[in-house]
Length: 417
Ligand code: UGA
Image (cartoon, rainbow, N blue to C red; front, top):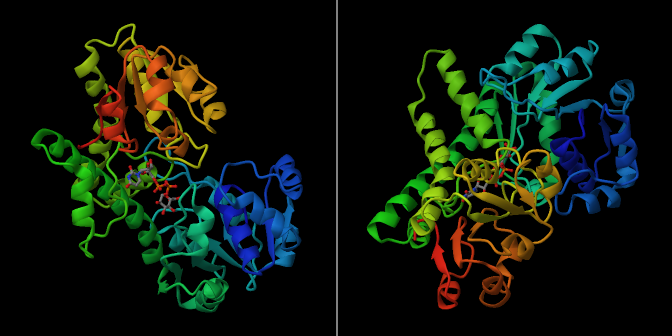
């Protein structure tokens, strides 16, 4: 693995679990020392256990020469964040390619999400370098499970790298998953199109939810009903306060820009993003409907992470909500079981609380942003009701027991119900 960030580490630990020998190169020495001690610097369920259990099969190092000496397939797992133009910043990928000496024995296996055409241009620049595209489809919070039980494995390789492609495919064989063998550009596109489609699916159900609210239908029932159609499928149809995270926004934009660079206007993806931005803000009008102007009101945000089981707050809806609420003059309290530390640097004007109850104390409204299980276990009818100044809940994930809350005297607003 070149890079032991979230993708590199999850891949390393899972390959080791399958019995393979893994060497992971990470440039930050302190990180290598911590990893060698079995300390995993991110919240990912099951990952620390896997790293510790397979410690004898994973070597962490800062040395590229050790990597080249001991391994033949170099999985590139470095960041490709968006630049101001919306293009992917490939400088870290290029730095990895530059570090490799000319060798017929080694192949670079691209795990990082890159624009379509990246493989072709790397191969043009480094003629003779083996190149395989092997995109990852791991979800934060369920990455280990996703790796060990994939829907499919995608391996893209050109004619000259076919043998390396065979070797990459063989690594995944114990998983028994369907393997899709393609050319490099198609594999690159499968990754971007998958994320863009999933984001589209969520924006679609969110718009259906908004119309349901006006017409008196229940989006949960609608999602269950359409999801049973095998052509649609039941997953990624949960309406909510909008999708976030570091991948969907970046990949939708990247695909749109890539199309634009060729002169093609990808209209659908423009709408997918806009729907999501509006969805993030709709909570504000739900609060205003019950509270009037929000000046001087206290609003408790339950959950900061972009989804449960992660401490990742990149592009999280909570950040947009906090900013918008403060723009309306409200006082924001926020609580998250694992992401609060990361949020401290970003939510500078919000009050970060140590528990949900502390955030709810004296609040005029609660907004559930992230469906952490502990929010379902709160004593809403008793302790929460007694603490809040006003019993108003906007359930941004349709997660709480609506009937129980209403029976306890709460004003309950869900999404699309
Ligand atoms: C996403 C993809 O699902 C992975 O397949 C992909 O590998 C990854 O991006 C990546 O490119 O690295 P991730 O961003 O970790 O994974 O998380 P998701 O579970 O996809 O959730 C993304 C956002 O959509 C979250 O904010 C979540 O709350 C929201 N969401 C998800 C919904 O609002 N409704 C749903 O039905 C599902």
